[in-house]
Image 1 (cartoon, protein in one colour):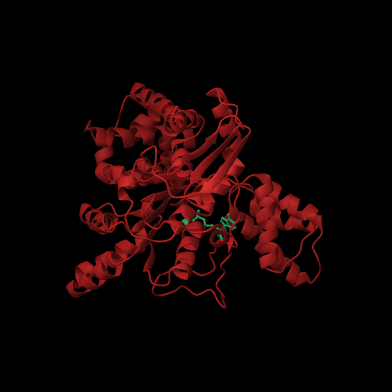
Image 2 (cartoon, rainbow, N blue to C red):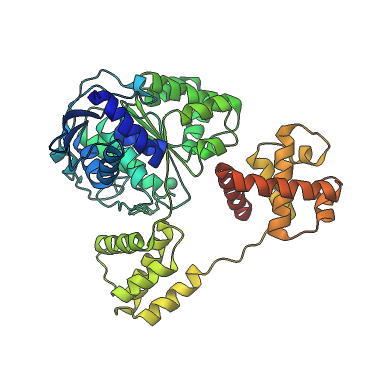
Length: 465
Ligand code: ADP
Ligand code: MG
């Protein structure tokens, strides 16, 4: 069997064992360059040292097994950095430009470039905060794919995955990661233009530009000239058609020029309720990766790193206690540490475990949640961009049916209201309609992960009101 065919067989085996995103990330631009069957040795070409390391560490065993199940007794796989033709065409490969930039060497990749930061002020040109770097970013299984995707963007700006869409809950490091990319890109490629912005600020600037026509040119020039455009919190993108359209004009203009686009959001593209389908599929067309929750070991690592950064020491039992009691996100982990630092400075003594427990008890206890039917309805209407009144009447368009069902479900689940009273709240509907809605939403939640995310963010919205 020719090398190319054999590699296809091996890859089809690997593909079954891994997610599409992972598969494309690591096996794009790989091939067999040498195969010594008798010695049981095979050499695989990989595009850069980064992929090499990853395949060696994470996929070696799976690859050996794949060769074995294809009846080749491979004992050793060698990974060599080489430019080769691709045996499989990954989606998006057409966006690879011919721009010649050297493939980074291993040394390049390992070299830690940490800019000298005297103070953390946001750069007015890029809008990046220099405190976010890769050197103070801990990688664990919860964020390794997102980190890998971002690294790949750093080494192949605009040439491999575009756009890259990172999503995950609050305080899990999305902003840190994408800003670290921006900061590092500025150091590595001093000639490129990097722009970081939250979607909210983008909309505000756009609004200003609408009001003062001469600002429009400035606005366009500022963003359409970017080589690396990073948009954070895309879930807050405006609901008005005109603004979305203008946003996607910028987005498309950059995309067509193979400029690297990075987006972050608290939910996957599918769950961006206010976005039109065309835009969603654009966002999904690149690489979509999520960030999960850090496990216990990673929480310990993060705490230790933050302690070094803040030049503050705590005993191991205290660190373990914090890692055990703060599980939800990294921002809270940092918050807990900060509170302890302050208390310790005030008392001017090292903290004992008992003192730590007391200090953190108040702050880590879940806040008792309280809401009202009014708030629930308001939050949902705003989330789906419909008028509250429209949800009360008999309009049966799908556009209204879903938000209405979500209201019924949340009134039941968050406030334990009776079915008839829920019917009352929604313009006098029958209780059987309410039961049907609740069952339907429950079923959808089980089958649809992005819908689960959607409900999660609606709840966040409700409890913020
Ligand atoms: P998100 O954008 O996902 O809401 P942030 O990026 O704002 O989260 O992260 C919240 C805080 O936690 C920030 O102070 C950030 O520096 C810190 N943080 C997040 N992830 C990591 C990580 N992997 N390693 C170190 N610090 C992190
Ligand atoms: Mg953020």
